[in-house]
Length: 387
Image (cartoon, rainbow, N blue to C red; front, top):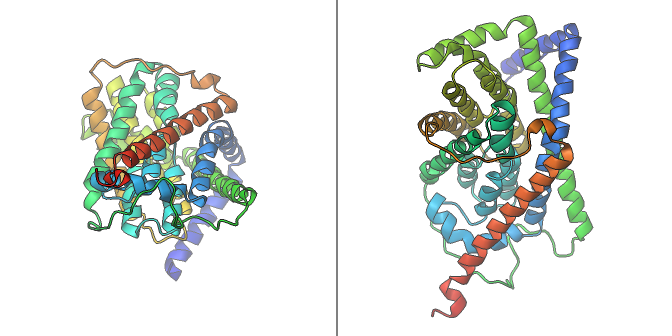
């Protein structure tokens, strides 16, 4: 970072600090709300995924089973087999689980820099619990809207995965021989002499370090929005985004939701869903915000990727593209009849219930990962001596 840029950032942080001191009530309320959301939803929702993925990587299971899934991931996404678990858990958890797993793969040299960037572009998704329950039930009051909302979000990301498959060029690789009981060392695994207690302690420590980063960025985003609202800075931004939405025949009143969603996904989505605009317009803007994810989440991803050689440029471009694609898809699919998907209302959720549901999603994701690996291992011709 050059000296002039550092000075401007220092001035910006000085202004931010002055605003914090001069608006203590707004700062406290925003901090309290952000930390309550982190404690009740984010911590129990992400902790199982972060611990499980970190431990699987340290034990070498991601590389081992990745050998069996190499033909599938190479053909579909031009990625190594180790990407399979990131894809599965990236679609069954919330940010920044996928980014943490991609960073772990890169540190262990289980993917190239371009493969890691490509994988990061289409495995960044909002949590299924958020898409199928929190938004449709808690914010819109209609559980049947969860299916098209989630379908638009995930399909937009899969389309990006297929479009990005040639980014960085193809890497011709020799397929490794898969074996249910490998006799050679597994790439990326820790030493066989490392005690299990030490591995578990490292996984838990890394998981909580990531979760604390998430808490910090959530709090910073909530406080920044509260100060913008208190100082009147939110109005001009909302009017500017409203004028931009009007060009696409969307109500300018949703400009405030886009402004908040630019910084924090949950607040922006809630603002869009609770506005007085028509349902189709509210869902279109909410889908766009969910695809973009917010600067708060992008800060979390940048922190997780710190120390690696992975660039954020392709990831940020994909978030813009995903937001636009998801908005178009939800607009096309909304008039169709959709089945009802019912979960408990978020207002009644407790941290224990969120933890139980996240464990269920983790179990389903791991089961799918192992089932795919087993099927591809069974049907490899090398298992049957070429028969």
